[in-house]
Image (cartoon, rainbow, N blue to C red):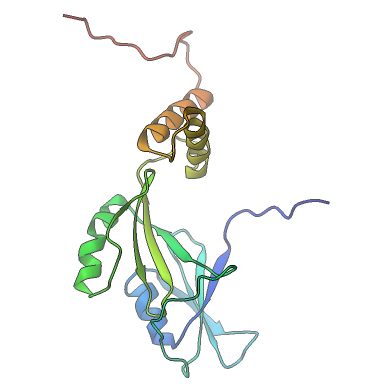
Length: 196
């Protein structure tokens, strides 16, 4: 028996309401370019809209002009999607409250997640959306996931409850030392400032 190894998210498809609601939300609020449209090849009465969330992957929406938006929160039962999280820069994150408020969109306010900042709000169909912004950049040659894995190991070894910025900083230092050679025999921390 062997795995079916994935290499990233190809796309996520959401059942939408009418076409314009999808365009206004995904492109008009979240800035995702509307890049492609064709009929839903499995259901001719629906259209299939494609949006680029910023990484070249796709968010797609099945739309039908007979469906009206229902803002009631989508189901969070077992097997249901709880929320979708999209990456934003710190610069954009710092503007999120103001930009959501100017549209009258209810939101959670900024949430401190230790390794990232988050804010939550619902789309016009009741799907919970998260805007998430990492508080770190991984060292060259590593991904955010690599840093998170190393930070997790450090956190567990120290008996800490959740990942915090100190775990991230130490993980970045560990990964850098692991991947970058040095002529120094002792790469430990030093203090080159004379003591007075």
